[in-house]
Length: 414
Image 1 (cartoon, one colour):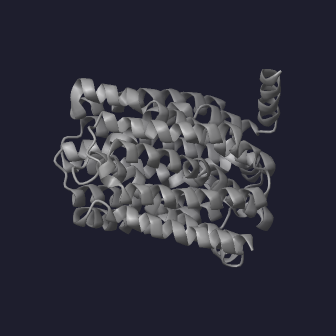
Image 2 (cartoon, one colour):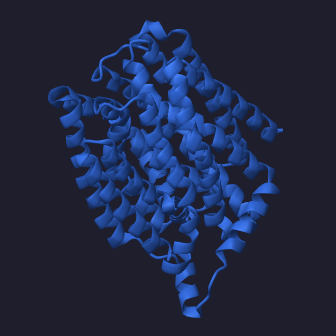
Image 3 (tube, helix red, strand yellow):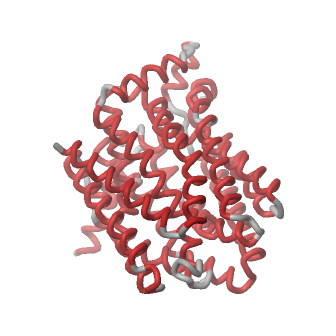
């Protein structure tokens, strides 16, 4: 009975997804599985190559710099080529060359070349997101985003497999094996998406009518729309402040876990931390997040998420020397925020865009991405400097940023 009910609910949700939503979401596992391993061990890999904290932060600041400049061209490419072709050209070209360069990287120059190609991918990040949700009803977009988050969570759950590879072959060769697996997986995904994705009807109609869009006017209209919409403006600010959380978690948490001044875990043991966090996230993405259908439910989920993130990082900072116990408690508490930080925020954002006019979607998403990435240019350098002073300092800054976001959510709720 329970199985039939669950199956029927899943079928109902899938029936209400658009065609491109299904293609992108169901092929996301080819990216999320290997890339969750790559992202977790990347700072440790760079440290093993001899990079200092400042050099590591410079690498990620460079990536953020590309992410500021290149998204401006996403809307232009989508208008000229169509959303599908623009997205697939940037995604397949950028990731393939980036991973090849990561595999052979031995020096700072190699790494910077790899980061440059990786930055090129983000040219059409807003185009990917538009393709992901534009043909799905607003009330079912949370389930699309939660499924995408679920795919990445599954990748995090399997991080101990990557830890075993690192344990068997060492940090250097083990990472190159993981990067090779990622390259093979992503090429498979590109073939499927090139074959299955549909071009958007709007571009096909524009081609027939030879319409030309003024991209600068679109961006001007998008900026005005954001400034005159309190929900959009608050989501923009919380996304910018959220960069402290994401960069600290992805770039400096792995280092903190193995740092003598941090939790002092081994590199292979550290891989179980994302496992526990992902278990919590997995349960919430399966049974809680897909059932969020309206604005009030979204706001409540985000409020609880910010509270959990604040508490989790306070635990990490205050009880740092408790080692594995602290790390496990942190991962469980942080799992809730992980479940809502992407899926609910992006659903809320896209639904608000519908309220003001979906014709500005790519431009508004680009403005939000660019604004966030402007902060990201300096955030890795700042966090790297703070980490060099004291490994706890970056996470204290995260607590402050999440408290501000919590206040903003409360004001939006009122």
